[in-house]
Image (cartoon, rainbow, N blue to C red; front, side, top):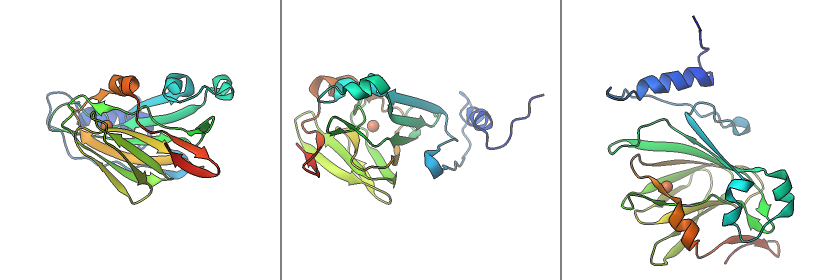
Length: 203
Ligand SMILES: [Fe+2]
């Protein structure tokens, strides 16, 4: 018999699988995020985006990053079924850094079901959430600890780390929303965020 220590990643995975088994009514549950040293060790699915995965979203190529291929961001997503009625939640860790002078950022996406909103809650660090509609409306909102950014339906969204430390935020949205990255790849965002003349510049 294999005993899994309580709190270990394997233990949590098994516990969550039990909670979300298809055909069973979910039980309420709680999760503790250990944000010390940027650890998020209790969630189900981890997506890692390295420079090579996202370099096409930046304005320029950075030869140093080509060689080092650092992690730009990681997403820890709750193992919740992507179906209407549920809420998906996640923690994003967006590392500090720049591609030449453009700040590290997430790919950005619309929701496949565009009439679905999302809430971000800043937990650590400081950055911006860029929001854009298909008809060209654009807004940027600061994200930092204790600040909520509400992203209404129909707005694409992308996070940018404008600080020199890890940016960590919690996100929650209807679990069936889906991610449309292709539209953002095709259209791009109207504005980018650079570090120029010792200032954060959105242009
Ligand atoms: Fe989203």
